Image 1 (spheres, helix red, strand yellow):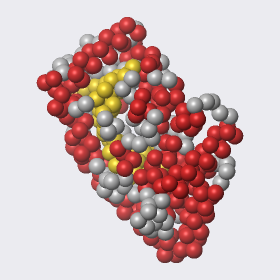
Image 2 (cartoon, helix red, strand yellow; image 1 turned 180 degrees about the horizontal axis):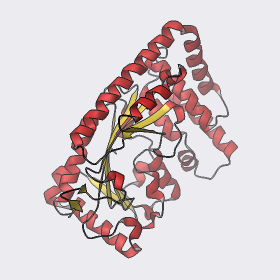
Image 3 (cartoon, rainbow, N blue to C red; image 1 turned 60 degrees about the horizontal axis):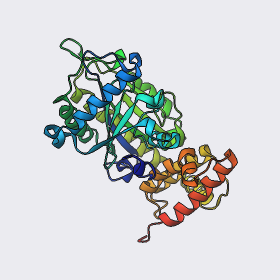
Image 4 (cartoon, rainbow, N blue to C red; image 1 turned 60 degrees about the vertical axis):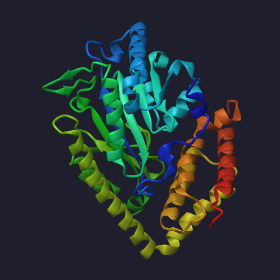
Amino acid sequence: MPINGKVSSANSRWMNSDGPDAGIVISSRIRVARNLAGVPFPHLLEPEKSMEVINEIKKALENKEASDLIGNLELTLLNDLSPLERQILVDKHLISPDLLNNFQAKAAAIRDDEAATVMINEEDHLRIQCLLSGLRLKEAWMIVNNIDDGLEKTLDYAFSEKLGYLTSCPTNTGTGLRASVMLHLTGLKIINQLGGVFNAISKLGLTVRGLYGEGTEALGDLFQISNQITLGQSEEEIINNLISITRQILAQEQEARQVLYRERREIVEDRVHRAYGILRCARILTMEETMRMLSDLRLGIGLKIISTVQDKLINELMVKIRPAFLIKTAGQDMSKRKLDTARADLIRKELENGINPAL
């Protein structure tokens, strides 16, 4: 299957840490929701009709007239993937956790570099997303908009002149656009200012979620910030508003880190080196502990306390240390203790191999 080769690799384009401010703004994501006119929403579809939707979208993806806009996205039925392979796609942020619910009549089309994905029959018939490194919301929007325009050459979208794009959830009606950034805010957390920041942005029409979206934990001091309103604003207004607020949070996080390093230098350095030492030497590591240590290590990279490890490696490790990837790599199921041991083994190996030889 087309996706299988990608599933075996932890790397995706957003992990490259080559975007603006990628040390703090881990990634930018744009996602639009679309539905086919005259077709019930996915949760109302019989399996046979769901497959008809998949086939219709598959034809649109393969349409020669639209190929220049769409690019090379290969479609795979989720039912053709193993449970581990499906979970790894979630762990890599290529598909949403919701796509795994009743996955038998769902599909995903993923671009070669894994920057763009079209999810089919999730909450809506189509969820088109782009995920890039750093603060690159406008570039991500351009990619999503091109794919959207290409698909619309052959697909008839459900659209109202009054309401905009019609979606299964009213909160997505209008532009159908969700813009989000994943931020590493360990400085603000350490100085206990996160609550105030999150309270302020909630009053500006934004929401804060965990590492894998709504209802998930903010492991490793990573938080997703996105718009709540899609109706009554243009795509450009939504994106520009999030960029402006992200830059303010970015400045606050940078200031918090500098204050910490200036006023508590020995404590910060000890915290960073202690995390680095544990990761390089530990024989047993839980998921939660590893994410805390990686967060501290990422802080050390940002403050140039650690110069031998790159952010790109930390991003890849966030996927490699998760149970699905560890089990797939081992080729067998494992108990929690064996997972914790395998995680520690992998971390030691990756940190040894990932040291920058030029430094």
